Length: 373
Image (cartoon, rainbow, N blue to C red; front, side):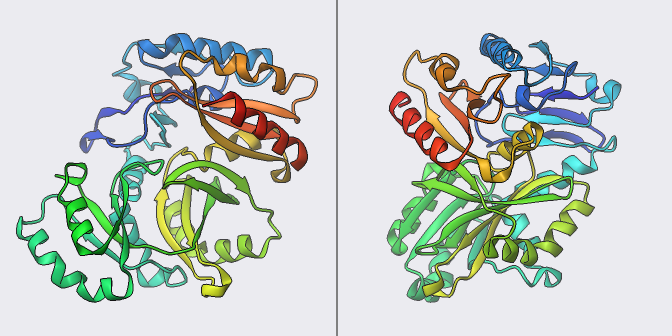
């Protein structure tokens, strides 16, 4: 039996307490991936929406009948032989000795991941110019920073500051010039945290290379003001899809060898007029917002040509299940319509999958734009 959690976790593992902090707010996506009989842990405040979502999937003939609990299962790590954990939006497969979890923790740290990616054996992968800061570095780091950045700023006057542990575009701030940059990194948002200063790639589009149990899919990421709001699958024969898969093959193999079988790699791709370079940005070693919709599509047996995915914000008091009901897939027609697959109860966000031909999906997306905030 697998046990699925919907909470940040601090577990007593053989290596000592492990805490995943700074990830996105809790959501109910685990219920969509759980198998019948799984135990799903949710905070007591989310039990009501969790039951609603479970009934919703049952009415569509989709998803298993999971067991919901709000009791903290402190002994289940040792007793149940966990193979899946959820930490809010972060899911990890776990060996009994926790090696997979610890590998995921390293990969989830943006600075540590880029240091791995720039290793010589992964030289097919390009990296943007970056400066890394560690929270424990001496106080004089900030006073010395300008001398290191002078030459960098001459070529790249606009920069991106990212927290090393974050998700969904949170804690990502643009800065132009030295004065604005210093104001950002000295501010409370990055105080006491690991972060990176990264070259801003003007005109780039963003893509994710998804890998789940050695299956792959490349998606175009829909970004609005640094926040991830959706994904569109690329077809396997697409030249860009093939190029990103080829250039990341060694790196993906290294990650898989660490026992992390579900992850996504984020890339920024410049327009052809600017050289068309593809730069790797980060790794999301979990059932994150880019890989999760694809895993649902695989479970539904939906062709990549016939689905996409968007996030929306709920209006005050809005019920997403009732809102989508007139347009939802049905037991008789499970490949055309909408499917609610993510419900961020605390931050008021919902993730909607659109199924069907491109014209139908555009029409449904327009409806959702009008109905949600």
